[in-house]
Image (cartoon, rainbow, N blue to C red; front, top):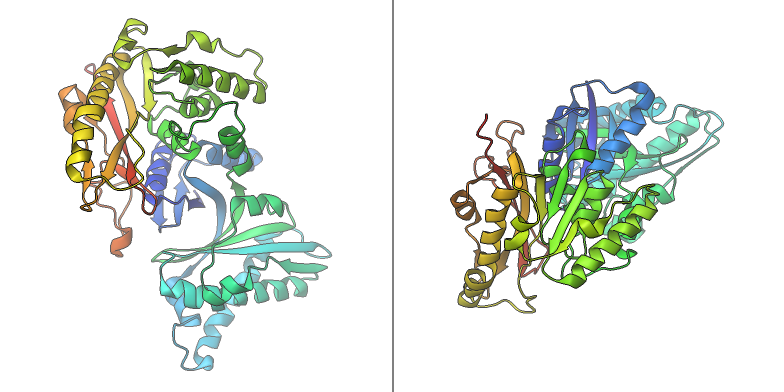
Length: 470
């Protein structure tokens, strides 16, 4: 079994849920064995072919929307040993010196694993530290200010002792080092500095409650490609667009990993087509609808544009697949039980500049938004094949009274014979002692995504049509 370190996106709940779902299926069957708010440690049960090792990791990275980097774990240091070497309060340097010496020896032992060729080579490396939580004082005051310089100095010295021609490390801004407010390098830095090459590397030190996992980065998300798809496509819509990473996560929640080219995906509120674009990139047979004709035309043109980028020989006739139609009329153009998955973000209502009053938000949900979601769930039951899934987002509105108003979506779904599927599967992930990192797996049936001061938040849900034959 092989262990890997995966760097999580900003919503670590969503990222962990996505990873866990991917790991339930071949060819990456395995489980999460440890995690923090920034990393997940996964163990792959089935052996990966050494000849296609890197390709397998790149494929895994391609599938995942909520993962920034994947590294191969090289070693582990127990948290007690790290804190003995780098305590919050240094009483005597003599007491901590043996612990630092042991860490230095460990660094020396793993160098050949990071750099197969060292002698007479020009080596460049970047150290990225991912703490248990960024708000930890230990990260800001110790790991950034003392542990990171220690790592840079020791790696440089040890490389020169092994006769490296040069040993240069990535230098973080001095101001950030002094304040402790430091982010590890981003995926675009890994690409810019060629840190996936043999004599150049990003070395990750990822912390959990248990200790520090040391990994070498093997693949990162391609921010340039996602940015191109999101910003350079012929048509975009601020009002009707979901970020690419969420589109990819939602598609993964449908649990469709085999024979994708024969799987039919529907987005009945397609907007400018983000979900359908990434479904198409992933090889699915895509269908969509929208009540506004301009969005239908935009989606068709965007999909054709993506087809040309992918150099597809036979671009489908999207005019036959993307329809200008109201949600309630979809059953008139598509056959019952004909879709393998429905993935969508319905219209959330107006964009608020200021928090609304509770009664106004509740009235909006009851009169404008709930009827749309009722129709969506009703039609999803008719169009989905038995046992297949609906993944959608629903609005959570924060009011001026600091209350949250949202739809009783589980009750609505049950009324129309769709079962709620918990985002996390019980007993797949163990929880943590730190309350900020705990997962209540019995109640975590949906996940909220929001930014600071965001008035309308996204809530991710997953429903399934029962298979009466099972």
